[in-house]
Each structure stands twice: as structure tokens, then as C-alpha cells.
Length: 413
Image 1: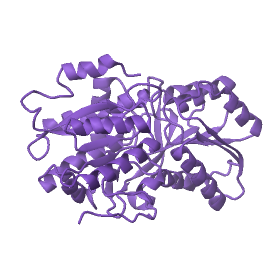
Image 2: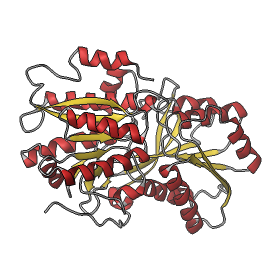
Image 3: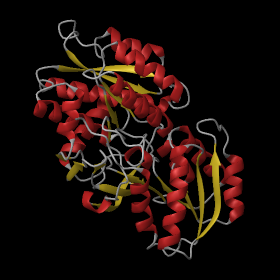
Image 4: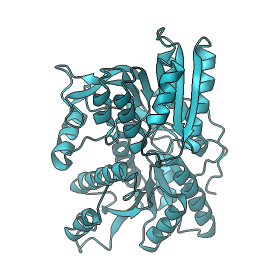
């Protein structure tokens, strides 16, 4: 959990606020994510990541002659609290908002920002979503002000199930997910896609549990064992993944896991405890061990600075594209930034080209299916000092991840 002293130390040293010489002429980015409570384990890493990126871009001159300034706001993974914090951010001069942890939060922010922009012409905001993946955000509830850099949950499940359909040892699948919009989207996509691609697979359990409230997953693991499942699919993140795998390790549950966020804080440690060597899979936009010199150099620098791994390559894509868009528009006006981002093609963090689809503001990028286990000579990084690291099992080009959208966007006149 992030402490108040952590944020205070950043402010005191000028890391967040920057020098007084540039404080009045900076590009303020409001980072609204959990900095306390159960979600803080991922929120803290996110804050470090965005500050790392601000420092990187500022060392290169910033954008449009201005430096970036990261303003942290603690939303406690709560939609209502997020709306309080976004108003505070606006009051402090931020016109760029970023958030990622929790699609229920993302939906609340997206709606609030769209309405704010309607009421305040000429003072619009732009919302950069780096991790909230409910498909509805770039479908029926899309807005011009919302841009997403993470693949949505349907895109991720499409990739996972395309891989799973060729794994003949999968016979019985158990679904366990968090009971909110994202978790519900994961279960829906998994059920529909497995039925279409492998109708012989039995779904022997379909469980939803409260978001970030369960402290002991032993009863859930007991149900999985009793079901006879050989495979589990879960979108769980933060402590809900780490504690789920810890309970699996305690119970000696030996199944394959197909996940979205096994790489989050505490996840790799819990995976190592299970002893499931390369039997826990994740769908990600990259990993530390992708054979790409530039990203591995950045990974090394990030770990040396913070002592943790970088599990947000998409944040690097987001911030670097933002700087490019500001320079292209020669403006920090959110509407002009948004127009510059549309259809932008960009060399992504782990190599290869991604693009921001104009129709719905969904970013498409190469995606990787990776597994966690013993690392080989070509895999230089382990995770959380476990001796286990990521190995690429499959890679998809950006064009092979594209799904249609139902977005009908109201655009600036």
C-alpha cells in the first residue's frame, strides 16, 4: 500500500511538482487511481510509471516547449470518489486525465468528462485510459474525449481462446471473476468464445466474487477442486489475483490458469508458490523478456530506479504518443490533441507498430501470450525475485487483434 509519505516525498523533492520555474507553465496530467486501500499495490506502480515517463519526456524537452507534471489523486478504486478527485484535478488546472484500474471507475469518469466538455466549451478535458478494459467504453458508451491504450477484454479473450482451442488437454474449465463490469465482460466473452471454438469443453463453474474485498479464497479454490476442472480462466487483478493463487498454492490445486493480470504486484510470487512452472498464462501487450533491445534497456533502468518490474508497457505507448500528438498539434488543447491522436501509427514499447482507431479510440498493438516459469539464457529478467520470468508462447500482430466496434461517436464540430 502506498503511504502518504511516499507522495509527500515526491512533492517535497519536486519530482511531482517540478521546479518553481516551470510550475506555472507545465502540461498537467491528473493521475486518478488507488493510492490507498486494496488496489494501491497496482496504483503505486502506476504512479511510479507515469513519473518515470514524465521524467523521460522532460529530459527530451517535453512537448510544445512545455514540461510534463504528474498530479496524483487517490480514488480508492471507487467511482464516486473518482468524481470528487477529477473535480479537484480540474480545479488545479489539469485538462488531461489518466486512469486505469477499474472499469466501473472508467465508466464514471468517461461519462463525467463528456458531460463536463458539453458544459464547458473551450475548456475541454481529454481522458487517457491505460488499463480499464470493459468493451463498452469503446463501443456503445464511446466518447470523443476517451482514448484507450489497453486491449479491451474481448480482444484479450479472443486471443486467449484462439490459443486454447488448440490445447487438446483442456476438457473442463472453471471461470472465476470479479463481480463488476469488467469481470462480467470476461465471463461473457469466455463462455461465448469457448462455445464457438471448442464446443466439447465443459464450463464446470462460473463464479463471481466481490471486487477487492475477499481476503481468503480457500472456499473458492475448494469449489474449483471439487468441480474437476483442469483449467481456470480469470480476469482477476491486484490482490484478487495474488490471494486467489496463494489459496491455490495452499490447497495444492494443480490446473492450468489463463489470466489477464498475473503480472501485477504479488502475482508472480503467488504463481511461484503454486509450483506451476509455465502453466500460468497471461495475455499482455508485452513483457520484460520480449527480445527487443530498447525495451529491455528501459526495463533495466526502471527496475534499478524503483526495485519493481514495469508491468505497464501500454503506459509508455500512451505517454509517448501523447507527446507526439501535442507536438503534431503544436497545442495542449485537449480537442486538438484528440484529433492528432486519431489514426496515429506508433512504434510500441516492445517493438512493432500499433495504431489508434479513429472510429472508437481503441488502440491496437501486438499482443503476447506469455507463461511464467523457469527462465532460460535468452530471458534476462525474473519477476519479484522469484527466479521465474515470462516466456513468449505466441505473438499476434496488431492487425490480427482487431474486432469490430458499435461506437457511434459525437465528434467536435
